[in-house]
Image (cartoon, rainbow over all chains, first blue to last red; front, side, top):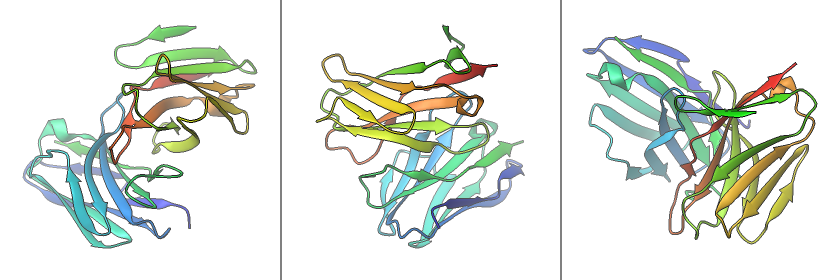
Length: 115
Length: 112
């Protein structure tokens, strides 16, 4: 299995809702990432988990809450989002935190719309 | 030809021609670089990588060139096909950094 699987593929939520994005990989990778991508922009790093511990939080608002239940799973809990949070949310994984030698494997993303 | 849109540069090429996508990176001490391809509705996909101790690396139909003097990276695609239409991002690992920094991206449009 050489894939990163993200669910759901699409999500529409209201500003008062609570939802979660899920990410799964079975490649034995020990680092997992959440990225946010706006239209016509490159992905922007949000969080990094290394060996199931949060190692980087790129000053992300607390309405985004990551969770790594085990080495294969990564969740992103969403609460009280704003319309400007609408974006493609990408999960990625790599063998180690440095992303060597083959960089990251990305999932196809969750297209989130906040109404 | 190449044009700069509102946020994303676009390169249009005829099917069968060679494509060259350019990227200026930010840190002269970065030691690892990757090109990613992102098709509509999908996540970025690894194409080819290069380390700073090399100036050229070839894959299947793709070549990456690294010019450290001017901090420039390029991706050459031979005999461009419709399936090559996508947004292409370069990414670098800065020194002492742990994670990739993505460039702004270039949209490649292949004309029939």
